[in-house]
Image (cartoon, rainbow, N blue to C red; front, side):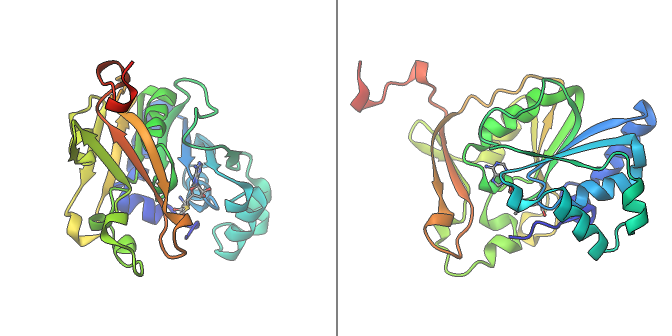
Length: 258
Ligand SMILES: C[S@@+](CC[C@H](N)C(=O)[O-])C[C@H]1O[C@@H](n2cnc3c(N)ncnc32)[C@H](O)[C@@H]1O
């Protein structure tokens, strides 16, 4: 799985994210940004290259093997993003943190002006917990854009995988009273959330779930289980997350009658 996407990719899929940052910096002078599932962190370093000390950039990964400071420096030299001399002069080099995005994120409430996440959420066990955590750590005027992991029809990448059964190409299952519903439609009915999915059959178009910091986001979904597709077969990647709209208080499963 590629871990070296840069801002060109982020701007394509997350709809000119650099412009959002430019506008906010003009207004506020300095912004704090989180890259959720940053991989090597090329995009984080490019943000430092574009905006200098007007950005403070933090990224998280599941493990150090997926990306760390030393690896990023090596990649930046290889890709000629910075020279050795330029690298030495950077005062606000991106910070790496390690955590599991399905759990409470290790950040304070209202810490970030922006959060972006590129092709990482499809690997998280509990995607809804992560999206609600993004809302908690965003400033009131903050915005998060997360590539949505909606599944097969949104991405050439996913469509291209070898031998993957159709029903394993969707990374969400959301159930409402015994019927499966569409997560992207559900997102648009949830306050503080928007899902953008332009021209979905063509692939290279903006696709993201947007979370706003000015509303407390509650998806009202209960996490049932996740299925790690990576463990089934080498060529099938990602994690399917299963939810129900039936919350604990209003639903007693038949086999668990109290
Ligand atoms: C496919 S890479 C994408 C990296 C980068 N965003 C890019 O587009 O090049 C997925 C990243 O998500 C991170 N990741 C996967 N599962 C995670 C989890 N449960 N918690 C935190 N990070 C996770 C991995 O560490 C990895 O860096």
